[in-house]
Length: 229
Ligand code: DX5
Ligand code: ZN
Figure 1 (tube, helix red, strand yellow):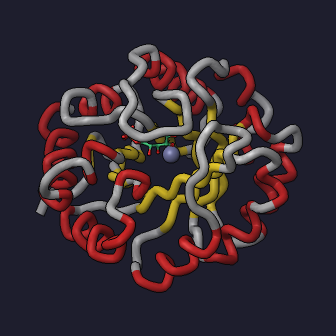
Figure 2: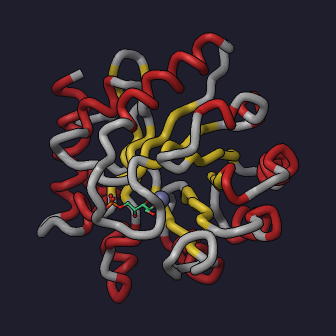
């Protein structure tokens, strides 16, 4: 069994169910768990903050009843503070909000934590790391988008590698334990470089559920992280 440990850091593969077959969601989740996935990434879109609509609270509730995997709710919605707590109550163990969508970041992060989940801050590809400056100490993890949010199956934006390195440095300089998550266009080709640059939680949608065998796809992604770093 391949475990996601590298250089003392724990690597989590977090398949994004956005690319799963929703008519067989339970089986798909069980397959990626067998492959070694340790987190389940759930993309929530409101058709306003991003130009797409996906899933919401009822699905999170059903998933939470059927799997032991921690649910990572990525809220791509405007004013996430209005809904963040409900996602924790629905069963999410991690809830992340976009800096571009919330003018009360500190309040929402505190709300998520007091509801009992880990709180994450998300940055779009063109949003500078400087916007994290004040919020960083209040976040359990930072999610860097390596595509523009809204759709699965997009191409990895390569400048994310340098952004990951700079974020890693920023966290180390402040002696924080903040974890780094990366999301968008991750595949077998680039997973080793994002891990080497500092990412610990690796989201993969189409590279997992677009593959003929999602279980094997997760296993291969995990192997690629330990093999090359
Ligand atoms: C994009 C979502 C991603 C997406 C990733 O808005 O936040 O989580 O599902 O899918 P891939 O891995 O196909 O880019
Ligand atoms: Zn996502």
